[in-house]
Image 1 (tube, rainbow, N blue to C red):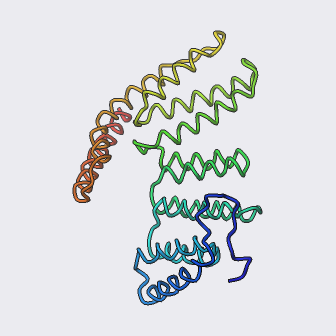
Image 2: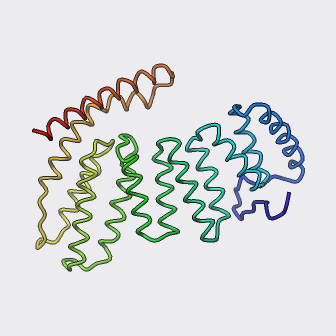
Image 3: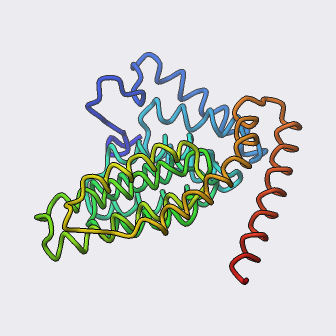
Length: 278
């Protein structure tokens, strides 16, 4: 292996290195597993073990090839994608390498619906690219995973944090401040109209914000109140399904829960569509 293909990191607890004594054993094991994959590409556990071996060896070239091959035959879970992406982030320094990280995130969000992946994606953009790119990515995440009842609020919270951070940069009651307040209010309005777990906490933060606004500045809370109450009613319908999904282990039972959950969701969406037409 060329020394330029060897992954290095300064993290003390990094799991990508192994002692010289282990390297030979790991390389032999990898060679054996590669032989198995030559005969059958659909061995999920073998793919998984191979990428982990290359990660331990710090063999970035072989690791990338193994991940690419793995993703060609199976959708990768969020855990696997994030492990790969975080490894790449540790060694990415140039603009082209950072753009490659974005490409990996784009591949990751297409395999499974994962709020965790979207959060990491947005956070990466926030730390490495212009704010416009962060907002663009966050909006994509919200359109894809913002309706996730159990975890979607994490993405909405991030939007509100970004808007509130921008608000803090302006003097109260200036034109720019007023423009930013509109964006903050809109973020709350959008979030509170979606049935999400723990949305009562977001509503409390909304009330707190309203109470802190200068008395000279007024807003109409009615649209937000209406959206929140409607979303809260819907959440009460979703809640039993979410509770079951958190504790159920049997795959067949989980499948039946999801089927019933989807059926109820479709009925509610049809009802809302009819209400809007009236």
